[in-house]
Every structure is written in structure tokens, then in C-alpha cells.
Amino acid sequence: MRSDLNFFMVAAPIFGYLGDRFNRKVILSCGIFFWSIVTLLSSFISKEYYWLFVLSRGLVGIGESSYSSISPTIIGDLFTNNSRTMMLSVFYLAIPLGSGLGYILGASAKVAAGDWHWALRVSPLLGITAGTLILLFVPEPKRGSADQMGGRIKTRTSWVCDMKALAKNRSYVFSSLASAAVSFATGAFGMWIPLYLARAQVVQKTAEACTKEICNSTDSMIFGAITCVTGLLGVLIGAVTTRLCRQKTERADPLVCAVSMLGSAIFICLIFVVAKKSIVGAYVCIFIGETLLFLNWAITADILMFVVIPTRRATAVAFQSFTSHLLGDAGSPYLIGLISDALQQSYATSALWRFLSLGYALMLCPFIIVLGGMFFLATALFFLDDREKAEKHQPCKTQKGPGVLSKVPVS
Image (cartoon, rainbow, N blue to C red; front, side, top):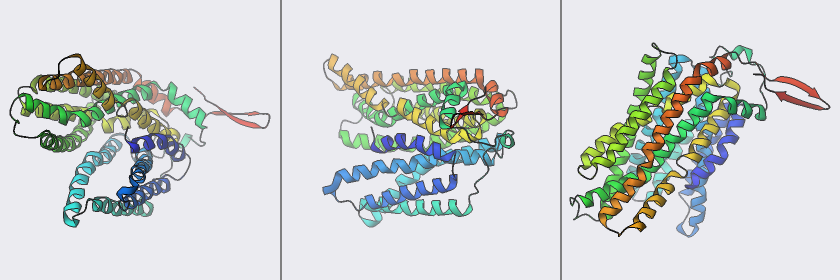
């Protein structure tokens, strides 16, 4: 498991708790400043202290968890309905766009300075600038100010009350499990698809002159570029599609996610059918499959905004992130690797069998994606009911005991 992912998973619930109770833009800015400073300092660590460098890369996850948990809730309190969907889409566009620009900026800094450490010295300046701009210009909206229920929510509930309510919120639970399915597939693909395509080229006898490293490097770059582009397209198409479908049905959000997931599974299955014959065909299937898979990024966040009251949204976003990583990309690359290794040991080793065994292991991903589509369909069944409960929500009743003030959730 990546060290930053470990820290991210641990820190996310903490930032979720803080984000529902204190000034969000201050917490958000502090998280970005922390990320920037740690990244900058890590560039000066010598190879003799490699363990310290690994630790610093892990601490980066703390900063990442701050803005991923809190930023959507600020957007949710500034906009509503179609406007909120569009603004969340703009926010989630930053994930693929930032990844692509990060590769470009890092590579350019390395070439210009002749030292890879400078790749870690440019981005912190941008982070500090962003954190400063947030402190100076981003408003701190009142929780629920853009929603119908905003005026009725006067008090915050306890953390225990929040967690119990989220556990009973069926739309939130099912959409979180669906998000974990997306994370499972993307984590596995990012680790293994480049190697799978390199093995496909060896099987086709089209890359015999290439070494394994060169093939893997080329396929990694192409796959990375495809992921950036499909992330951008997916978020944009998802926002536009949802906006149009809302004119037909109030369950548009989860239904669009479900259909896109099921469609994605079909094209991802086709990758393993055509890869042996055509690398270009495999890339086309990857492009369409990932576009459909990424289509639900912003919509999932919007579903959460509809079915969770404003005063516990940061907690909900944080635990959704925690769940998606824990059940998704935290373990999927290793599980796929274990399955592939087990299949290879069962038969004589050959280039063909190395290719096939990894393909058979990766076939687990479309099945998980179909399961995620089923979770979104389940979300559609309960979406209107849970949205109505959120809109009519009343704060927990306050019961006084002997010297104790406790919170009891009201259904």
C-alpha cells in the first residue's frame, strides 16, 4: 500500500470531523500549506535518509485528505441543484487535469534544472499560492445556506449521532460501496494495464526488439495520457448527461451512474478480448471504458449532497473516501498480482501464459464494476426517500441525564 494512501485513510475521518465543526477554509488552507511544506522539504532529503523521504511522501496524504474531505462541502453550501452539479464537476476536473499537468511540470522542471529534486520544488509554490488565495478570497458559507433545510439546522449533532445516521442512510451506503468499486478498478488498472499491454505486444511478436523496460515505459505514458483525457471527458459528459436526464426523472443521478458503470464493464471486458490481436483496439476499449467509469466522479459527490444534511457532509465525504480506498485501490493492485502469480505457478511459464494469467486476474475488475452498477441501482431505489428525509431533517433531540448532555437521533 502506498504510504500517502495510509496517511490519507487515517487523516480523512479526522478532517471530516473538524470540517463539520470549525472554519472550513482555515482547515483547508492549513492542509494545503502542510502538503506544500512537506513536499518542499522532502526534495532536500539525501539518499542516506531514504526512510525519511518515504515518511515525507506519506505525510503528503494528510494534506490531500484535508481538501478532498472539505472542498466539496464548501461547494455544496455555495450552490444547489444543476449549479452545484456543474461546480462539483469543475472541482473534480482538477483530478485528471492536475495529474496530467503534474507530469508535464515535473518533467519540465527536471529537464530545465538537470535534477529531479526540482520537480518537488515547483509544485509547493503553487500549493502555497492556492492556500493563500483560499484564505483571502473564498467565503466560508453558512452550512446549509444553499439548501432548503439550511434555515432549520441550528445545532450540530455528536459524532456518534452522525455516524449512526450515515449508517442508516441507504443511498449514502450504497453510493459509497459503488465508489469503492470504481476505486478498485482504477487502482488495479493503474498498476497492471501498462504491463498487460507490454506482454500483449510480446505475444504479438511486434515488440521483440524492445526490452521489457522500454515497452513498459511507453505503455505507461500512453495509459497515463488516456487516463487524464478520459477523466476530463468523463466528468464533463457526466455533468451534462445528468442535467438533461433530470428533466425526465428525479432519480437521474444514481441512474446515470449505474448505466455508465454497466457500460464501462462491457468495454473493459473487451480489452482482454482484443489485446492479443490489436493493441490499438485495446487502447480504444480502455478509452471508452475509462470515460464511462469516470463519468460518475462528480455525480457521486452530488448524490451525497442531496441525501446528507449540511452539518455532517464533511464527515460523510471523509468516510466515503476512507471506504472507497480501503475496499478499493488500497488492496486491488495486490489482489490482482496475487491471482496472476497463482495462475502462473499452475502452468509452465511462457510469454503467452504470463500475458493470459494477468488478463484472467484483471477480469475480476469488470465483475466488481458490474457490482458497483448494482449498488448505484440500489441507490436509485432509495434516493428520493433519503433526499426527502434530509430536506425534512430535524436536529437530534437533546436529553438531559444526571450531569450529561446526550444526543438522540430523530427519524
